[in-house]
Length: 210
Image 1 (cartoon, rainbow, N blue to C red):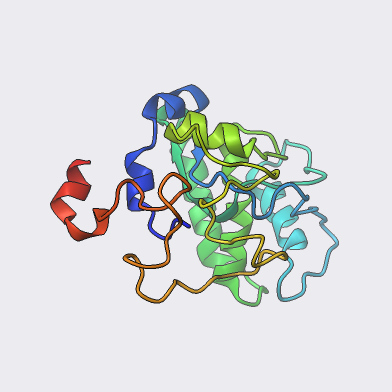
Image 2 (cartoon, rainbow, N blue to C red):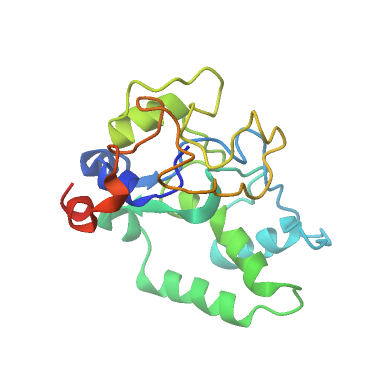
C-alpha cells in the first residue's frame, strides 16, 4: 500500500499531462463510479451535502452554461495541469472563484464546503466532462508508467490504494498508517510495495534524484 506520494510524483509522465491537459494524480476510484454531486438550486444542504452550494457556485461562475445533471471525478483535487488548460479561462475567472471562497455566506463549515465544491469542479474547469472516471489500470500505466499492476476489480489496483476496499468495503475516510512504517507495513515488492525500491525512505538525496 502506498502511503507516501513523493515517489509517485517522481514517476509522473509529463508527456501524458501534455496530452491530456488535466491529469488527476489519483487513479484508484474513491468516489467513482457513482455520481457524487447532483446540483440543485433549491436544495437545502445538510452537514455533508453540497448539491445546493455547488449549483449556486456553478451559476455564478458559468452563468451561460447549463447546470450539470450529475458530477463526479477522482478524489481530492490533486492534479497536474498544463498552461494551456489553465489559460482556457482569463485571470479574472480564477479571481472570481477565489473571492467566492472567501466571501460565501450562509454555509456551515464554509472552508470544507467550498473546498468540496471545487474538488468536483476543477476537472470541468480544465476541460474534462462532468462525469469523469478514467479507467484505473490505464491511468496507472499511461500516467505513471506502472503497467504491470494487479487490477482485478474496477477502480482499484492491488497495493496502490490508501483505502483498501478489502479492508474498508465502504471506502471510509482514512486508514491507519501501519506501525513501523515505512520499514514495515508495505506490500510485497512488485505488488505496490517498496516503492520505488526497498529502502527508498532512508536516503533523501537519492529520493530527490531518483
